[in-house]
Image 1 (cartoon, rainbow, N blue to C red):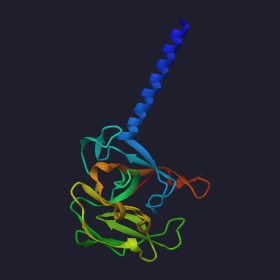
Image 2 (cartoon, one colour):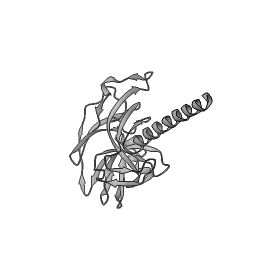
Image 3 (cartoon, one colour):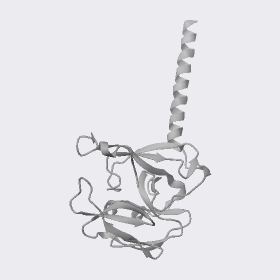
Image 4 (cartoon, one colour):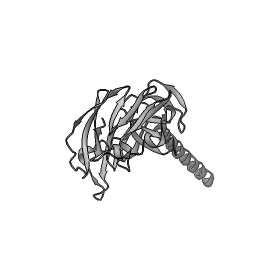
Length: 223
């Protein structure tokens, strides 16, 4: 009799745990999520060691654990920082939306030209710990000004000829323009691959200094 009751309790406890885990993972999959950033492809906006908050409901509602859209109410806009599955290998990446469907985009010596208009750039104040050999600029992306960094000398990644973004696809670039594997390598990103919008740095730890907290970055918005 006691053994039967014990089995019932154990089974009930495990059932509760499994349901709780499933619900938690479902929330991360379709409502809100966080993403650890291991590389510097979005510097100076996002640093290695940042953990960013991702709004999975920014553009649509997906069926948990899939890329199937249950409902949609918007699309990514130029300048948004988004998390998406790479069309090359499915890995989650964080980049900035540059080209929308139908846009004609080119880049000459790191100056973007979108639909025939050259974006404006101005010198920006360097971050607290600037890297040697880099320039820091502010790029005005259709009224969405944001920081970026470039190598002092143009590289092979600094230019590309005009391309037209196909319908249902987006062109993504990193803010660290000369050190970012983005649409210049894996091509346009399908709309269905976009998982959500990165809105803020939830917490940040300096991977180059024994993972000491960067308190000034905790809960800071991303632009």
